[in-house]
Figure: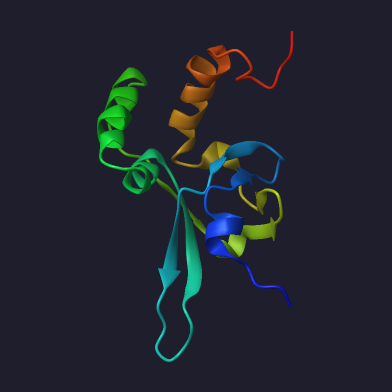
Length: 126
């Protein structure tokens, strides 16, 4: 049986919800410690605060600036139980509705207002 490399196969992987919609990337993972047993992946984390912690201190300023522009005063981090993972391949497919995630507001705002305006940033072709 092939093992799963969390850093290579899961962290930063594209997340796809049950409707085949891209909903962001895996920004962090929470592991569960159990007495006398190996560590277990418990939760997938999605959100700017988690991403910024991994990238570095300079991201704090950028994250706050984008949040102000998006009129999003609070940190929104989505916590998805690892049991919602259907499949790990070139994407991580989840059994969740991406529209209901806390982190979705900022992701949608960034896609519409920033990424969508960058040439080649949108999947739609004109």
